[in-house]
Length: 63
Image (tube, rainbow, N blue to C red; front, top):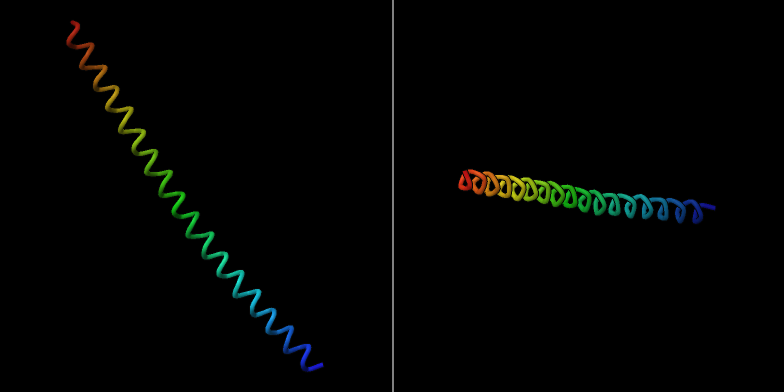
């Protein structure tokens, strides 16, 4: 019986360790994805602002 409890304890510990490792990997992937989305949004805003400035310049030249 002691052997079974020891085996169960080892398996439980391995499962917790694996779960923690997976949570860390997924957490880091999530943080990286968020950073990429924020970077893309920033680039998008810059592109839109540049396009609007170019359009405003074009309209001023036509006047």
